[in-house]
Image (tube, rainbow, N blue to C red; front, side, top):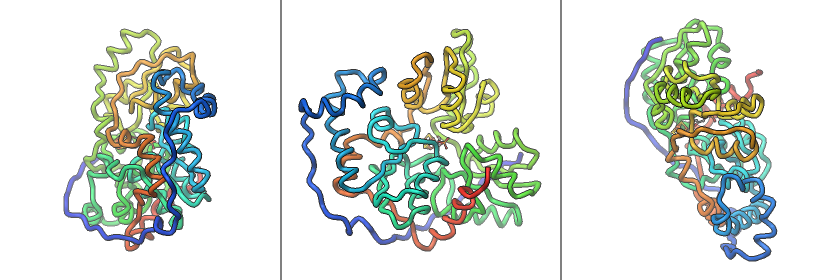
Length: 358
Ligand code: 13P
Ligand code: SF4
């Protein structure tokens, strides 16, 4: 595998806002009344093993207000598997990995999509369903992978490797997607790389995902040096120490982890692949080598599995909170738009991936 790196500047333009077309609404009451307690009790039952009872009176009024406002606004909440349990289990309409969220965004018929995840996910939703108002509760929710490469970088790569197809991980800006032939996620990267029938493919910007793909295919993979700041921190030594201390422990890793970590894992897959593995195999003890909320989200419905948790937090995913989701629905902020000059080309790259037959 060959590694490459170049850098240049980035251009940004603006697009029109849809939010102005919606009616204003009042901020709902956030009192923890008996009625709120009764109505949210079935939701608390879903998360009672991972959210202390003392925290519920603070969360419950937000959860009720968000769920009421979703109906009033005809909004749908898409939440990534890394969202905290009160978001994942109590206000989300659809949860999943990046691919599932993109597929669901494309089909959504609500007027408003609230993306509880990071900015590239919201941008992908906007690309696939451009007539909808797409909101992200915190515009600062970024991603170290998306920040690692620009559209100009991709143009330089194309000059350096003429004729080599460019596969771009969805964890990138629309501007980068626009310069790509097709997108991929961690759940379909091998299939996407092989879909060209070519002997060499650029797989950017995650170096470790590219290295993982290279172990699964005969296609020569050219990589970029981008990394996920959450997954790059895990080490094989630390995981082997946990394995020694916990006989029977299964290590379940995300492909954004360094290769030495993947080598000691019992299973490697996308966030939904990891969840599916735990639900199907029900290991007595599991260590999810990924973001912290994943274990809490699955623990809520896999009581027989003990989770060993040397997890790392994604500071970008953790910017999304119940108060910010409520603000987002009341004030219709922050609206995610995509520069019309890049949107059509970026959409093509995402649609090619979504339409790829499995
Ligand atoms: P998934 O597509 O596996 O959900 O990964 C997205 C992500 O950001 C992982 O860090
Ligand atoms: Fe980006 Fe890593 Fe956070 Fe996923 S976990 S959003 S790849 S920084």
